[in-house]
Image 1 (cartoon, rainbow, N blue to C red):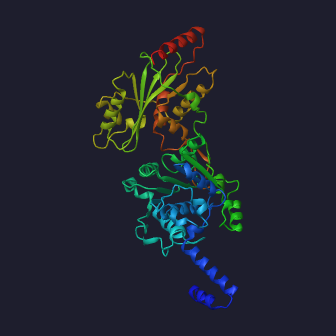
Image 2: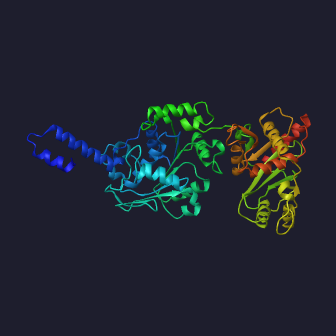
Image 3: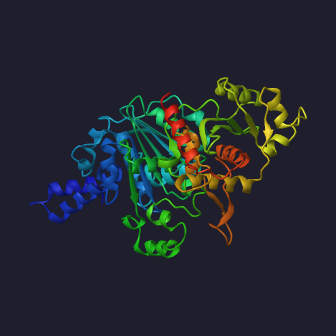
Length: 505
């Protein structure tokens, strides 16, 4: 029986038939929930923390296990910003929405997935326009929805609202030029996409919500572990970043038997904390766990002119080229890294010119270059990489080390800095070397991705995002390491030197 027929019958029944009335109201409520599900959805459990952070945080990270409900809350938040605050007045969801900085009549929203199949099958068809575990948040028959462009993954509203689903695979240029009220990123894309999305929210003081299962440990699947960096920043008190961790066991839509299967599959597994509770995992560990910013990172000071200067270059034909400048205390052997260069998509000539400009005309005593790349001959000119740099004014020599030796030597320097009684030279980094410090913090051991050794270490650092680490290792391995002279004469000489040099700053 249709709702209209039931309503007519209700009007004609003498005294009001309670059964008919109840059926009419039930069907009306059912239809309303189907058309306006966003108005009926109310956050639960940890999702309420997401709403709380959206009040005053610029970025909200929602880290959850598989099936933890993070995509559901992301979809609902995107629908709220699209529909506008006025749409929710008097609805069951009003208490959750009323204090959020949502435009009254809705705004412009981007929804970003890792690839188009994920956008289409999970975000679009299961949550926004179609429904699987629950009705869609933006039903095509909803009067607030003007039209839906399936081909473009766009939803237009009656008040010029616009929601667009995008794939991170489409590249950075596709993320330029717009001004957004909200961007929802589902899972971790590459850092350049996130950076571009951040720029898109500045004009309107927009929000960014990121929902992800942190499976890639601190190295992440993206080249730069920006998600982990934001997480650490929040842990250190960043005022504009909020973090919520959702457990798979809090998902109201997940059947009990499915929860039991997930627990049985992932409990005790290396990926268990991420899969079940949304916690960052570190399956193999940092290469430099001894790195302590409180001891290794220092405020820049005026380096004595008589200290030898070194520059170590890790070049690449197409990827990033990195260089590190260091000054060495001739008395103690301590090494002070004071400048960095990190750039990609340039020719050897451009890199060489930039490195010389960065040097600012100062005297450089030793130039080092990656021994493997420096010895290889260019296919066009048949000249070695080292010759190409020499012809451009940088008299590089090949760093005569192997990978294991350079890695071991750098660890010795790192450890010496944290041990006051060490007889070995130490290493310090000026706090202006942001990229170098970031790479140290995200430099991890490589693992086997599949097979019986999945998750186990390959006993070598993971390649990628390690260019400055290579440059550092070439330099530290080439330096002659002397036993630290701890005599009284040297001790007081060093104190006098530092007092004198600090007076220059």
